[in-house]
Image (cartoon, rainbow, N blue to C red; front, side, top):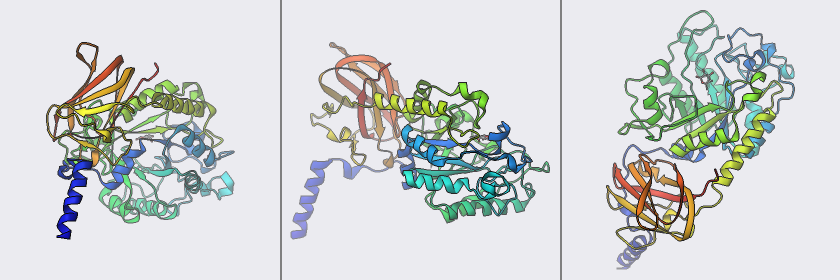
Length: 469
Ligand code: FUL
C-alpha cells in the first residue's frame, strides 16, 4: 500500500516536472559520455611547434639537425594564460609532427628534445605543457603524427610497434589527455618507403592506456575532420558518419561528406574544425602581419561552433617559445567579441509555449543543461516566444538535447512584424548548437517551427541576442 502511494507521488512529481521526460526514447546513434563532454568544450587551441619553427618550414624533411630546436624563452604558462584569456577550454600539442622530432625525450627515437641544445637536452615540452595545463585547469590533447620522415624503421611492420611504444610513453607518463589527434597526411619515410599503419592496434592500445580519449581522424572513431582547414562547418551538420569502406587519409570519405556528415550515418562522429590563426600551421616571422583579426575569428566561430561542431584554433609559438603578441592580441579581441555578443540573453524574461498548450516551458531558458523540452509530435512542432516588451534582436541560439540523438532536419524562425509572422531564418540541422543570425527584428513575438525531424524534437535551450554589427 505504502509502495503504491509512493509510486503515485513520484509519478505525480514527474508529471508536473516534465510531462514527457519518461517517454523520450533515444534516436540512435547517440554520443558516448566522453563525446558529450567533448561537445561542451566548443573551442580550444592547437599548438604546432618543433624544428619547423626554427627552419621556417611547414613540413620538415626529418633530417634536420636536432640542435636547430632551441627556443630561447619557452614558457608554456604563457600559452595557458593566453588560452584562458581567450576562453579556450584546452590545448592540443604536436608532440610529434611529420618530421619525426619528439617534443619529449622518447626512448623510441634519436631525434628528440634530448638531442637538442635546448636546456642542455634536459627539457620536455610535453611535460611542461601538461603541468601548465593542470595548473590552469585546462584540458590537454596530443597530436602524434603516424607519418614519420625520420624514423629508420618507417616503412616496415616494426614501425607500428615503434609508434605504439611512443604512444605508450605519452599516454602513461603525462596524465590524462582529452583528445588524440591523427592527421591524414601519409607520405614516404627517410628511405622512400611507405607505411601500412595498423590503426586497429593503435586504437586498441590507446584505449587500453586512456579509455576516456576521444580520437580524431578523418573517420574518428571519436571525432571527424570537417573536410577543410578553413575552420568552417556546413550549415547542415549531422554528427553522424558512415565509415564502412573508408580509410584515414587518401581513402577517407569525400570532403563534402566530412563537412556535413551523413543524415542516417551509423556512427556518432561529430565534426571538429581545425584552422590556423596564421596562413601556416607553424610560426613564420613573415606571417606576423597576416594574423587573423578578431572579427575573422568570430566569424569562424559562428561557422563552426555555430553549426554544431567544435573549433580547434592553431596558435603557433615563435622561436622564443612564446605566443607572438599579434596572435595574443587577436585572441583577446576574439574573446571580447564573443562576450559582447552573448552577454545578454533577451529571452530570460520571455514566455515560451508550445502552440498546442498555454503552459510556460521554463526548461528551455533555465540555463540548466540537464533539462529540456520534448515535443509530442514529429512534424511541425511550433514554439511561440513572447517577449515582455518590443525587443531588437538579430540572433537565436538553439540547442538540441543530443544525448537523445540528433533529430531536427528543417526549421524556420519567424518574427511578428505587428501584423503577421514573417520567416527570417530557414535552417536545416540544429544539433549541439545552432547560432542563427538574421536581419535585426523589433518584435514582441517569435515563432520557431520545426517542420521536419527524425523523431519528435528534444531541445535543451533557446536564447536570443542582439549582436552588434
Ligand atoms: C595536416 C598536416 O599535414 C599539417 O602539417 C598540419 O599538422 C595539419 C593540422 O594537419 O594533415
